[in-house]
Image (cartoon, rainbow, N blue to C red; front, side, top):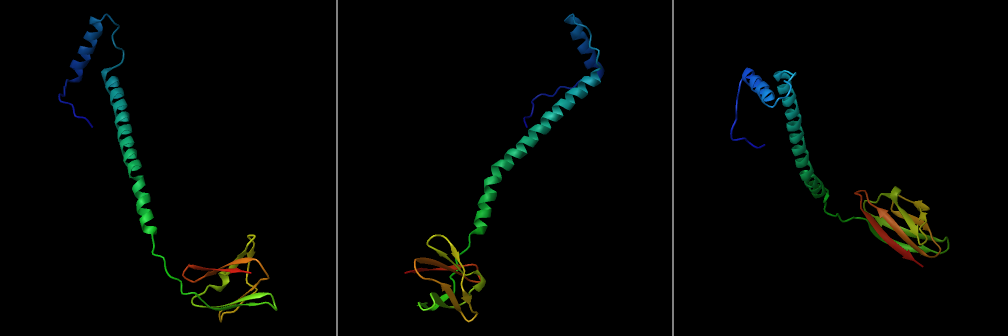
Length: 161
């Protein structure tokens, strides 16, 4: 990563003699390891450090670019809301049979229609016809009726008595 200004080179024989002379001048016992073994150990240590440095730089770059991945993924998921073509043509309360009747038109997904009562219970239709008629048992309280379409949208209707 950083370039040195001066590079010194010396042959191995002269380097070994210089090392032995330094030990003799300092009144130390001479080196028992060969210069080749010392050079190899130094090379192995510097290689490990250099490799670790480049791996850490690569991981740092990946960490810095991680937020951009989530930003791009969020941009792709933004979709325009579509308007559902499900319409309630007619509705009425059949008090004789305690039923609420809906007549629907459009691309209704009839198997997915349900309602939630005011206490949170899920109520499924008592009858559904492909001609657009949906009947719920209803006596009193509040019903939130959810009518899905085939495109994935949901129309919500609220019934209170």
